[in-house]
Image (cartoon, rainbow, N blue to C red):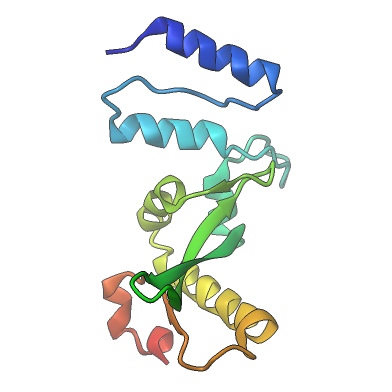
Length: 158
């Protein structure tokens, strides 16, 4: 259940520390609630061609994804060695907050932009590799999650 005193305490802490609490959802959480929350949270005020209030869907259609990559070490725990890094995509909202894929991948899939998104991630990784990783041990592995349907697309796997 939902304890109103906990919600109130969290709300007061947010105000005390000047946190931008965008929303809260009561359990159980349904996918349509998350979609509505994403739409409200990621709404970007844009003025284009005389129309106001384009949401994040409009920015995706333009293939201008505000994607950042973060790298999670893959560790062989019994010998305490980093064996690789997993690339994780994060959507940067208008405030610079990095949001996990659960916030943006459903919209990308709904718009059929998986290939564009994957190419952006791969190109960003190539840039990052040359900037940060090219001097590291060549046995270090990098992993990325890719839509299985794109694995048969030659323009992606090349």
